[in-house]
Image 1 (cartoon, helix red, strand yellow):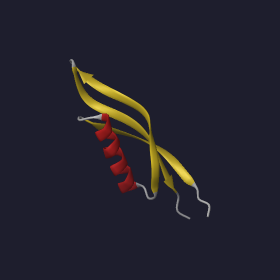
Image 2 (cartoon, one colour):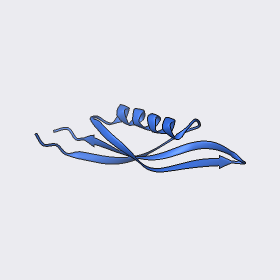
Image 3 (tube, rainbow, N blue to C red):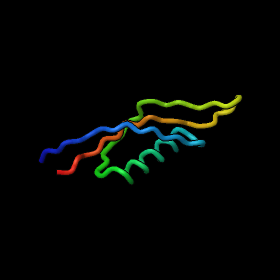
Length: 68
């Protein structure tokens, strides 16, 4: 059986951690996209305010299989 997949880029943020940002991004992608199969973290950033980290941001490349 053959299949065709697509990759889409999403950005997610969390005030807790990079891991939490990834989990939030994957959770949201699965609610919007069907057949999510994998993701990889393309980039990580932090938003700093004063001397504190305000937000953790990740850019995810999410792979999902297209329906026939």
